[in-house]
Picture 1 (cartoon, rainbow, N blue to C red):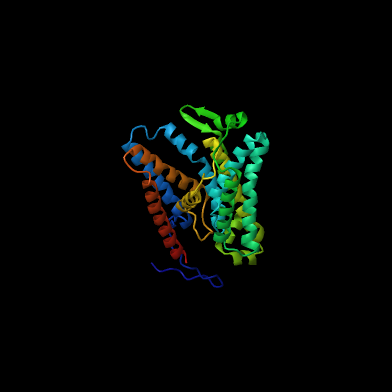
Picture 2 (tube, rainbow, N blue to C red):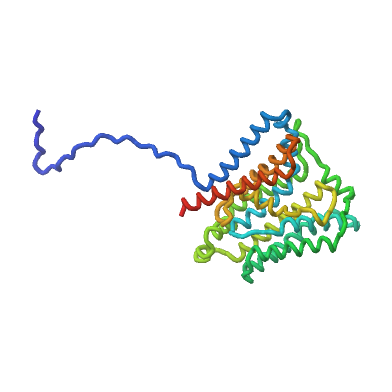
Length: 342
């Protein structure tokens, strides 16, 4: 059948194309979340293997003890996350933790009230963190060297204050450390509650404040952050202040756990904190990482120790071997993701 010609002066008609079907784009996961997802998978597999291999492994008591025994390390990992996100490192947190325990024990033994001792113990870490930040940014000292000096300084102060272990028997402090809330078979201590509050605050600060966004920007490229007019100097210094404060608070939590102050507490604990942060998905070069991922990293480390304890036939040194293997795997994963991004 012939089509009729358009009327004179009328616009020519265009053929109507059939409606194209809407194509759904595949959902792609942001590469920044891949290391954290890997940590979560490792943690889930460890829980599954432990639950199937050992009786009473997945009980509320075991999971509660996992948090209670590692509350101080969770706080250290939160502070370390801030520093590593800027592209730095803090090697002093183990020594600062020991200094905080020693200050707490010595001052309580001298008769000072708990309300005075606790801020002084945490404040010591804050001051050392501030010194690190000033040295690193304003005097251009490498973070490794500056925090290494802080590590020796804090450890030396520990032995000057208390060459021997000091037991803590102050009634108010013991009552605070002994606080336990029972939810059925679940247990919650004051140290775990404080650690969870620190995690929540760290998450809010990093993701919902200008300071947190600047921390990520510095890790992504300090010169670019300067060109954007961001407060790089203040943010870098504050990142180390956060780490020092968390180390001081971690020492307070460890003093609650051990009821003592000892100069050799926390030897090499800074390495555990760094390992937890890296296993939790934070890039050592900075710019990418999450506080919640660092918490997962701490739980992985604690669960390794728990599985070895349940096994009963393995040496405790297997903990270090497994941590070393996991650390190498996650560093290699980070390297692959970095190369793909560039």
